Length: 367
Image 1 (tube, rainbow, N blue to C red):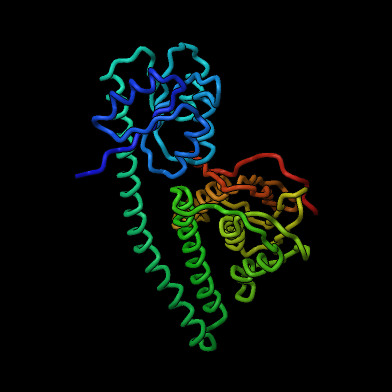
Image 2: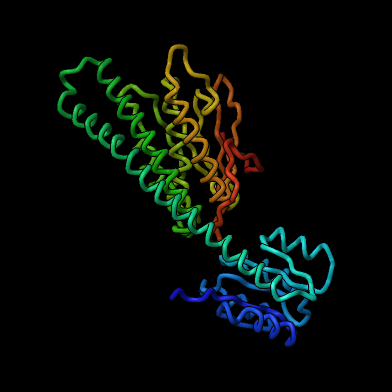
């Protein structure tokens, strides 16, 4: 026998609270409380599926304030708002906070039961959709990573075993194959990782980051100047510390640097600085990422990588609360400016995805 769904009723009046309990108890496991602040603490264990909130509770948190606190705490629960008042503002505020339904007093028993059943059905539908998405992504991840890892591995073997037997142009072609495969693999891994963050299966917990050695390792991993690619120059002061989620930041910066290395033009300059408590970064180079048309006669394979790059930049910047902006740097060069604020608490991903660079205020970058 399946366990009953747990329902929480929050109302500061005994009569409505008990009447709702009588209506729901035959079908669900019901808990009642008189104060919104107590409800917030009880809901943190994640065992409740639906909460019914009275809008007007003058002695404690109102229904709107309680729902706001629930959302701020990241508690996953369906909310149904109940009130005898017809004031539109608090009702709309609750709708904007994701309330599933509004029920006006006096209510009928069947109306309450129907609303709770519908909320549970909506919740179950989302769970199934999430499970299907995770299975699909897991399968897709395997199907994509396996051939890409094989390409990277074989190209490394060829580089180590046959380097001296190849002409310079062939060595450069081999290096390009390896670099492009690593680039595409990095984008896919970035999307899968950020997808886990979006789903809530991985939390974005900030920690102190010593930027200089971390950034040196990141740049060295991408640098292909020894195989004919553009020179990578790094400028970062020693002792620069940031409070951020390092892995998400690495996904963001790696995409921007990888895109710059696709051009065999002038040097790529990567700069980091303290932007008034935030972390500031700049990637300056000759190529304008994501907006350079395909060369004549080339395939559209890179267009796919470009779309992946857009998504990684959009999701990572959302999760970090970062701004990313393009600026002309003179002499046909472009600067990508990134400002990453200090993360003071677990970041909550945006529901919407952007396919372009977000714009916003940022500190002046050093020249």
